[in-house]
Image 1 (cartoon, rainbow, N blue to C red):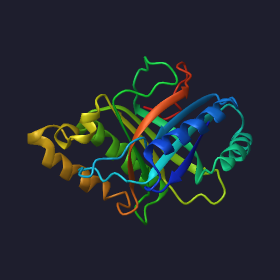
Image 2: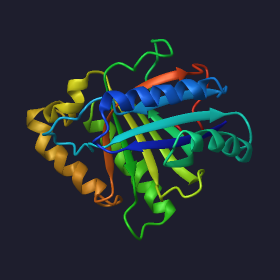
Image 3: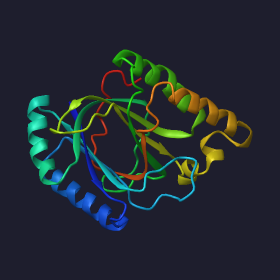
Image 4: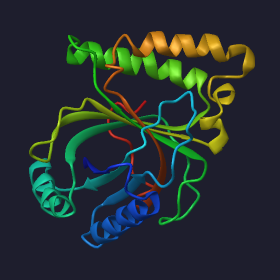
Length: 238
């Protein structure tokens, strides 16, 4: 099954509520076009002014689509629809799930807890193999050992789907069971005694394979509009 992800953007001056309504309206129209699976991840509120996580204040929506057609047919089909919705970029991705929640809430309802979306750019000079090794074999186990992650989705960008899409190497979707676990650094980094050493470990790790000046973190809401609960992750998920 092909997975495609499209980005819709708006400046921080656009109201959070209005942007949320726009994203949900786009999702409803896409749902009517019959994707195999469909998920929206979008900024629905203002991030805190002070946070250890440098959340962006502009608006972003990530449309995640799964299609059973060939990659070429899927890209042609959904590009035509998403270009009409004003998508800023689109990518074909390969998904893996080092940690996956068990969904027990219905389609159309926000995922409980807190969610963060991160757009990744590799550090200059890294090969594909080295970037993936540092991310999958180094950073992912570290993040899962430090952060209280309930769900962790890695999307490796295989190729741009929408013409003119800017370079991007990865899209990460993370969920925690309670919003406070994401916004409170003591809870996100393992408690008072472990917080500073854990923050230093994470910083040293990510600066070794990511372009920190280009990374984008967003405080988001996730909503499945159509989920196939019986679907297996793509190869390499575990």
